[in-house]
Image 1 (tube, rainbow, N blue to C red):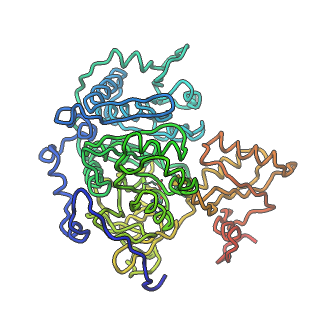
Image 2 (spheres, rainbow, N blue to C red):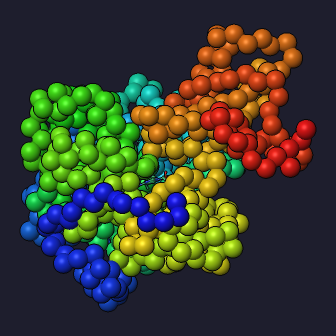
Image 3 (cartoon, rainbow, N blue to C red):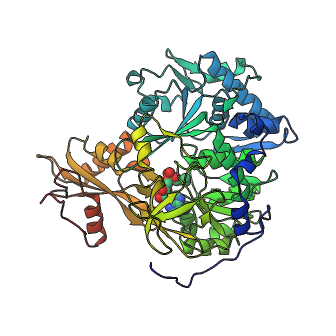
Length: 575
Ligand code: WT7
């Protein structure tokens, strides 16, 4: 892209905050001013969980529904006061076990209300939450718990089988939330302990820089990295919840993200509750009928989901959408992958609303580039930097590039929800700032002359399948653990619904022959060893993989061949 093109514009709408214009919001914005909206701002001693729940429980929102939970088996509602008491009990449960500030407590469960009250309770005592996605298999669970040296994990009797306690010397307690016949040493009966625990808790007042959550995410090399965030992130959770999610305390808000990923915590827990909104959580499997019905049943007003979900709804047909009353929706948002203009046009038709794209990452902790109501929208663009965020496109030396030049999407530090560390790996952390101190996102993009940012792809080999970030190295490492696999190279292959699917190229060891059964066995091996979303949907057997002379598999060559594109510079290839 080198010059201005005629772009489609969807004009601004009226948000509840009635910001005058993007430009005036951006030019007058100061993070320090947002801080003054919190009671702790004079002391600096705070607690994110207190601000999200207890502040409301002690005020006028005390009896307001804070959490609506629904899955195929459970339908429950909790007020702010109830969430305050249950999370206090959980905090006391942890304290009784000797768990305290800075200790890592993991959550490994299918979605249920106990995750939400447990996360709040853990943060209240100053401990660090480690959320895991329920689909993780033993290898994925082990990597994360071992790296974080977790002391406790909250889980179910079914999922605990995937926690290899013999390989985790630091893990003292397995807190099991449901009933089971036999309790092993170190297993804690959640129900019994919660019944005995007090509703009153001494909240840990911590510094703004005190950590509260550790989210593991994938890069293109090495094991998953633990991205650490601090309580001060609440400043950004709160203000982006107000301006971007456009939340007020009478909203019914539904974020479809699982707390195993950062969308499901920042925007599935903290932003809505900091703003006093009613937060709807839906467990169970995706189905277009059920999702539309959920909007009707609970009169959802603000809805945050992802392009893959929108594309699946779109392909289910507009008939299905018409069966439910979607008229309560007033604001719809998307995150995680590029949002196709076609999906936005579809959204205008079935919801009568714009779908607002937002761009950010696990590492940034909260929104960075956004669309909010008072902004004109350009379908295909991620929007403009949130006020207080300075974003740019830089070249490989860290020099800023002019409009329409493709380069690294970079952000000037700091901002409140910025990660503070990669757990156990200071070198990985420093890598993000290698170009003149900019935070380098790993995405490539360009900026137009009006300041809109346009996503183009990843700079590295990280795969984005249905909005889930998968490291090819992780999958390759698992593949070569299979006795039949000699070598493996893994890429993201474009897919109309999922954005990308995982495709693996493998070479077989002597004595193995390619059969459909063997390929299926290899696929299941990855699925059962890592997780369902890491398993390759396609596996192709090749004689030899393209490698550099130093033996590194050249994924970009595999990708170019797959797409029928020129393979580019091959000067470093082996032969
Ligand atoms: C990567 C971050 C934090 C949200 C969930 C994903 C891609 C994210 C967009 C968007 C195009 C997007 C980027 C980014 N991504 N939002 N609006 N348009 N791509 O968090 O797992 O840390 O992944 O997701 O490639 O780097 P994550």
